[in-house]
Each structure stands twice: as C-alpha cells, then as structure tokens.
Length: 570
Image (cartoon, rainbow, N blue to C red; front, top):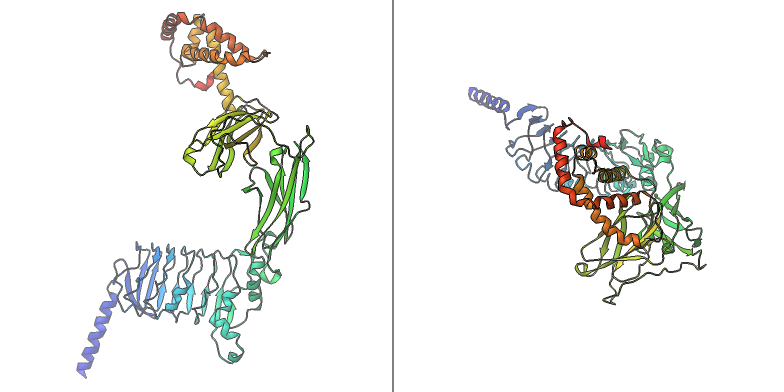
C-alpha cells in the first residue's frame, strides 16, 4: 500500500511541476477545465510556436502579431480540441492548415483581417462544433461553405462585409438537409445558432432566396438576431428583411425612343436609351469601337427596374456623325441598342459631309491597322497640349500627321511627327475661338474618333498674367536705359540683367517680322508698343559695355533691400 501511495505522490508532484513551468518562451502553460492549456497574450509572436508540448488540449494566442495559418503549424499537437486565435492580424488561412488537428471542436478567429476562408479545409475537422469568424472582412460566402460542417452548433459571421448570400449556401448544409427530409423528422437534431447581423446587405433580386430563408427559418436552425437590415439600394436602406418583397432577377433589355436622329451642325444632340434590368446594370455608350468619354452621360432612375441614360454631345460637328450604342450589363448578361446620328451642314444642306484637308505626299500607300486615342492633356487661354495612345503594327517606324486649325476652316495646318513621339503642344491660339485637331497615320485622312473640337477660353490664368507682367517690365527697362536712374531701377529691383533679356527680345523680333509682313492690317495694341520699344533698343547695342559699367557702379552705392520679395515687383 505504501508503494502505491509513493508512486501516486510522485506522479502528482511531476504533474504539478510540469504544469507550473513555462512551456513556450513568452507564454505560459496551465491546467484548467479544458485540460492542459497554452496561453500567449499580447506577446511578440509572429507565427505559431513550433515547440508546443504534445499534450496541449487548448491553445489561446490573442493580441499578438500572427499573420498566417500555414500548413504544419499544429503538427505536434494532435490532441488539440480548442483553438482560440482572436484579435491578431491573420489575413491568410491555408488549405491544409488544420490537417493535423482532427479532434478540433472549437475554432475562434474573431477580430482578424480575413477576407476569405478555404472552406474545404474543414474536411479535416469533422467534429468542429463552434466556428467564430465575427469582426473580419469576409465579403463572399460560396455555395459549398457549410458542406463540411455537419456537426456545427454555432456559426458567427456577424460584423463582416457580406452583401449577398445565395440560398444554396444553406441548401448544401447537411444539418439543413436533415431537418427537411421527410423520413428523418423523428430524429432529434441539435440546434445550430447562426449570427449574420451587422453586414452591409444589398437587398436586390440576388438576395431574394436568402431573404426567403430568413423569413422561414425555424429550429433546429436559430438566428441570433433575426432583424437583418438592408444597407442598399437607397429605396430599401434601413428596412428589415421581413419588411421587403424582392423580385426575380432580369437580364438587361435596352430600348431607344429614336433609332435615327438628324441634327444641324453646332446644335447640341441628346441620345437616350431605356434599360430594364435587375439588379441595376452598368451602362456605357460606345462610338465605333471606343467607349465615349469626352461627352456628358447622365442616368435617371425611373423605377426599381428601369433606368434612363442620356448621352449629350455639345455643338455637334460633322465628325460626330455615326452609330452610337447604349450597352448595359449585369451578372445575367448584356444587351445593347444603336442610334444613328446624322449631322447636317448649314452650308451644303447635306447630312454628314466630309471635310477636305491638305495632305502631304505619301511615301507609302499601305493601310496599317491602327487604333489612336487622342486627348487634350492641358489647356490654357492661348495653347493646348495633346497626347495620344496608338496601337500600330510597327510602332518603331510609325509616323503621325496632326491636322490643326480653326473649326470652320477646311484647310488645316499639317504637322508630321516622327516615331516614338506621342505628344505635341500648340501655342499662340486666339482666345474665345473654336478649333479642331486630328491625329492620324502619316498622310492619311482623319477618321471618325481621331479628332477633337475645343474652344479656347477668355480668362488669362494667374501664371500667364505674371509672365506678361514680367514681359512688360523687360520692355520698360529697354525704354529707360538712356537714363541712369532708370538703369539703376532695372538692375537693382528686377534682379536680372535687363540687357541680356532685352537682347533676346531683339532676336525674336527679327524672326517675328516675317510673320507680321503677311498681315495687311495691324491693330494698335500692346504688341506694337513692344515692337517699337525693341527697335529702339536694338539701335543702342553698341553702347552695351558703358551701360553695364554705369549700372554696376550705381548699384554698389545703394544699400541692398533686406528680405525683398520678388513678388512685390508685380
């Protein structure tokens, strides 16, 4: 008898000693109602420890830095029953992460950053009863999600990002199937609690089956909170599931009030289409093979299943003529309707006439398959910057031609651009003037979709005002160079060499004279003042050194202003 007592006391002493020793660095082991447990709270762990004792039945690692549940993480704890990994940063759960814990009955992953779950991973845990996934970022629940959770008694998916759930998710759940089999009604089934509240439900036709399930749910399935609330669409936001009646989904059907529209050049054109679909579809307009982006598109909701879309083309041009398509799509499919736009010229009275362009001689008559997307990347009162994207057969050898001019001119200026260049800037435009610019392959006529019509503005930007004021100061300096005091003001106040700047203006003036000779009349503007000032300045270039010396001497005799802001000059 004494021998047995000694053995019992020894085993008890060993158990107590082992239970009180730390089993993993930074964690502790203890015995509780679950058995031997590993507890790691607010530690620096970044992955599941590899030296977990094999007799551990419960693992609780919370408020740590775990980011992943990888395969083999629990290879040494085959007797694990309870796994609590709440409030970590877990974003990934691998497919075979639970293959070593066949006896697992409880898995808690609350407060992590999971966007998806490999639901087939639960094939390895047939005894799982509690699955807690609340406060994650799950946005999809696939149809097979509950297929391998036959013994589940508690599932918490609350406070996630679920918007739509198919009714088939529950039709594939073994517990739901057992409860609805006529030959198994006499069986006693354990209740299963579902928590699905606090998700941003989209109450359209896609949720119809799930709403019907919620309305008809009964034991053994119990909802923790049956007051599920719609977040969208606006017509149903804030309503409970039991207050709404959803219709079946519809494939888009597009119709147009007019299939052929004729309009005069310069007037605004409005193309309309009506789309009937559920759920609400995505709608866009195309012209040729391109999506229309340059014009305004507006949508108006007529009712829950009908939307009106309008494409507004301001000040139509003959190049805007052609076939426009209104296209609508949702998850069931797509549909489209076409509208033919005819543009009638005020001069000729013919619909959609073609303009004439001056073409340079073509070095090749071959036609190349090409796609050119042209846009204006920057526009000021007096200039624009063009950019284009081109898909050609030989981009390294492809030349482009730019046709540019006033909107009403039939003869456009032609600029040829070499390979590898996809931008061009045009300056010295007239304000409040309508222009047209086209980009094509070299020596080819512009095609539909390769031209842009734009109007220059009337306001001068702040930067342009500043540049013009600087230009005025340079000219004034040139006019007063003969006076020492004026020379002094130039050299000290503007902080740059007036002579260098003004001499540059002289050179530009000579180049500009050729252009001025072409004009029969000359307006009395500031430009004429500038030309006369520059002319007087050029006659004094011989005394440049004397003026430099006198300016420098007078500058030294006057103290330099402290912290003078250059902007004060303007």
